[in-house]
Amino acid sequence: STSYDAHLRVWRGDAGSGGLEDFTVQVNEGEVILDVIHRLQATEAPDLAVRWNCKAGKCGSCGAEIDGRPRLMCMTRMSLFAQDATITITPLRTFPVVRDLVTDVGFNYTKAREIPAFVPPEGVAPGEYRMRQEDVERSQEFRKCIECFLCQDVCHVVRDHEENKQAFAGPRFLMRMAELDMHPLDDAEAQGLDRRRAVTEDHGLGYCNITKCCTEVCPESIKITDNALIPMKERAADRSYDPLVWLGNKIRRR
Ligand code: SF4
Ligand code: F3S
Ligand code: FES
Image (tube, rainbow, N blue to C red; front, side):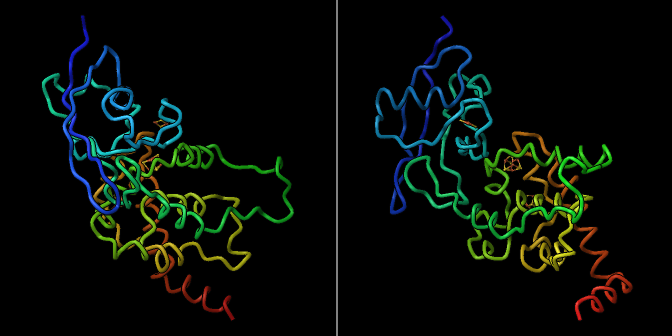
């Protein structure tokens, strides 16, 4: 048979205390980490806390760290690991633990709320919007995001640096701001919203030093760094250092 017993080391505890516990769990052919975690719940650890919904890599709920790397548990095949390996499963490190593998990802919702929404162009009805295909495709790539927050978890700016959380929105939300700033129909400026100023001064784009760890862990393979963060850095720099742009902004503000 193709079943075998896997060795899991799972973090258990809550905000106050916790530690790693060893388990041996049966694995069947084709299973993913989440299947094995569910079997563990059904057998030895009925009170193990784990968050999941879709089992299809689309809801973004089941993020955890497998041997220290952020992954979706439902999309991580057991066949990735040697059968005799000990697989360590820990909660996302950048967010506070609620219990076991469940963390409080509220930080991300706070950052999401700080970003003003798309501003529709005045005098153009929905349905009359016209965009170049290139611009449509750029937005579509960013909008594949399932908000799993694995990129937010891995980014060294906030991982182990609680003190940076206030000033840094993280790759997922810097990407959102880039999406809106590059959107040809976003009319934020008409409402006095300066997205380039905000991304730099309020959301800490300058903290990102392009390590690309966010891009490496994204389950949707979004090129966060190359297609959103680097272009946004260029756009924000143009605005700050081009004297004519600077003067234009000064005059408009009066
Ligand atoms: Fe997850 Fe990718 Fe979205 Fe980040 S950009 S939250 S890694 S889907
Ligand atoms: Fe962080 Fe990604 Fe920049 S991991 S440092 S946001 S390239
Ligand atoms: Fe939905 Fe894993 S359970 S992404």
